[in-house]
Image (cartoon, rainbow, N blue to C red; front, side, top):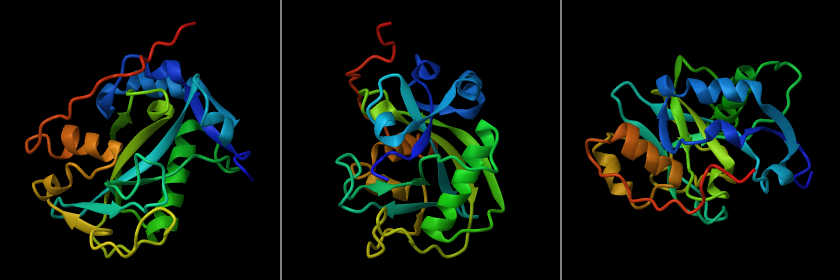
Length: 219
């Protein structure tokens, strides 16, 4: 389709003043704004927009012993994801005739991504934990992660070679929060924020960030 397929977008104004990890209990204003201010844009247009951002439903997978699953991203990806270690699985939201609400689109997309990328069809427990917002630049902020924590203890096998490396010794394996420190310099941007602000706040210090592009754009 060459980027002409339409994806879900929300107004950038919904994210004004927010950065890094926003706990779900503190994200009500963003969620309410998103529900009332979402549209559909061709993906190529969304990827270059200064007014709209793309919500990406993501799964953070945890087993019954409170270990977290990681994945090695492939090298043929954008620079900030190139061969990085990721804690999340997710994807863009496409139109679907059975979905009507903003929430139903996110849930449907998350289930699709888990099934397509990992073969997970039955999720026993999923709960929203928060949003990850990267406001370092306009480019970084064009996607916002809506993160759900998924309880899953079965074996995981990568089924999306275009996204994750199936050859990596890390992909599909679980690590305790203290063990995740070894990936501190290898995480992709969203995973680093999740580790520092949610999973391993007691084990790590926040990475210094220099905001290059303010969220409040000129009218």
